[in-house]
Length: 580
Ligand SMILES: [Zn+2]
Image 1 (cartoon, rainbow, N blue to C red):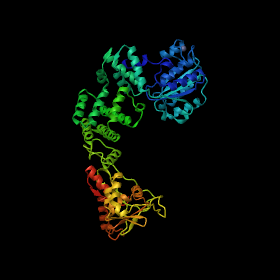
Image 2: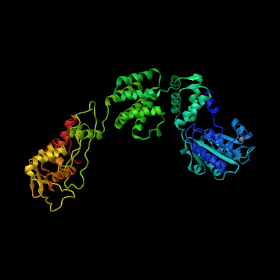
Image 3: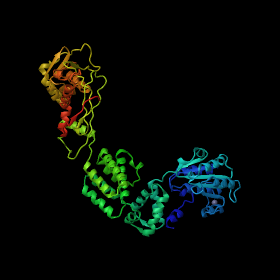
Image 4: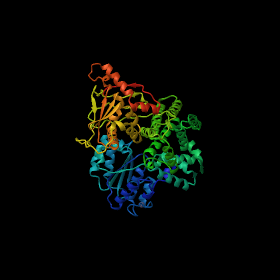
């Protein structure tokens, strides 16, 4: 009794009263007024969104003896019989229990006769996907050429189980889940009409729980109304429906993100004591973090989330205070935890362990933010280790050299916590060789000499100072240069160790250095690197071990690595070399 009361009482008796489904309703009414109703219709959608309700409304409209084509009068004999459930010309068949070929044969026999009272015979088959293949085949012929006095209306929750041959012969109407906001408004209207005092928050809890199904929501309301009488508190909702107040998740999320383990456990204990279902709780908490992630990445999160304005602003507020990476990490931990809980005999411990892990994991600083911080450090504007009080994970990788660089220079890339250096190409700096790089595009063969250029050797220190003001990191690297000379239009920089000049040789850096040189010396130099200590690196394959050792030394001394380890307080763990 309690279940059906509201659903029956509030079943729409006219198209105007249908909750949601505006598009489908408009199409159906148009079909009625234009007298173009298809003889086979298929309504699909999740449970409780109005499939059979719409089919019955169509039946009523088709057979109504008075009134507008799309407005059943609800007064004539046909309408009242349909509403009372005893109309002779309306056959409602449950596909689940009448699924065989025999039932379909009987049905086909029946529709050969003209309607008893009304204009049309109307056959509604609910859960039509349950029919057997033979039954569908038997139906097929009738659907191809339905008698003019017969309308078929099928309803299904599982559209994909309907044979394509049937689908192609039906006019299809796909019903959507009813939006959260519409459900809440509808339930509020019912509560008002039933003279039950219930808070907006409680209605929202029910609306969310209904997940787009009007009937599910109404059955929850039924349970509540019979429990609480004329006045229903938020506590009643939590108790009767086993729903946890959304604020609990909000507080728990804040505590988790603040790494406040004690706070988390307190909040959890309160809910547990109140008798909530553990797996359900974990699932809803996961849902809350999903909402946070969506709020973080989407400009209009309300399009995806069933939230009231108040809840939405709380979620946006929390999401704004943490990085997307952090939210993703928490979401992953919770997802893993709630999966583990399904199979655990101690789900509570599993969930508590998730809290411990999550609070220990800390916040993740995105690589882009770290790089910005790095720039700040290099410019001397940010103090060392600012804001890095908690464990930090990061990933930095340098870009591939651009194709215009003639020689492939090994580059280092540093991954999480600097434990390893990923594979390198075999070192290609040849012993005693001059590693030169073309200035891409800009250099003219004649190396046009600008008048009144400064002399390199004499002004080298000043040049380093000039560079320091523009690209801070480059200055100390240039200071490692053993000698800098102007050799007939080439700026020859000699280094004792190939690793010292490796960073400078990178395409972008080299271009920058050449630009600085042009500005400072007023001469369009081609920059050439000469490496003195290169004999240590033997690429001939004669002594593999020694060459690897040398390469490792080069990598460990790489200024980029050294700078990074200094800034983040890390150290080089192991170095791996090989092909990239
Ligand atoms: Zn009527």
